[in-house]
Image 1 (cartoon, rainbow, N blue to C red):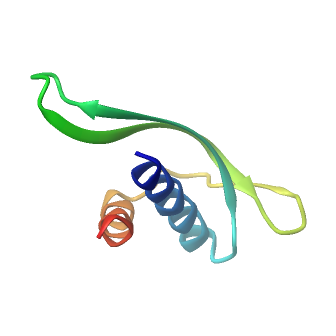
Image 2: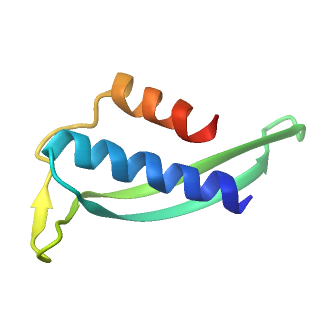
Length: 81
């Protein structure tokens, strides 16, 4: 379960950094659910994410926009696989 949680954080971090074109560390609260509504094994992550993150110098950088689905989806696939 730690692997899927870490992959979710890295995907969000890489997406934020890609959007701002510099390294960003976002705030993330993640909960791993090991099963779906039908009680079959279906591990997935629910995340609460800040609207931005901190750069290397400690300044908070706002995204100012939504994360593009196509970008986060491709980064997530790469992290999981």
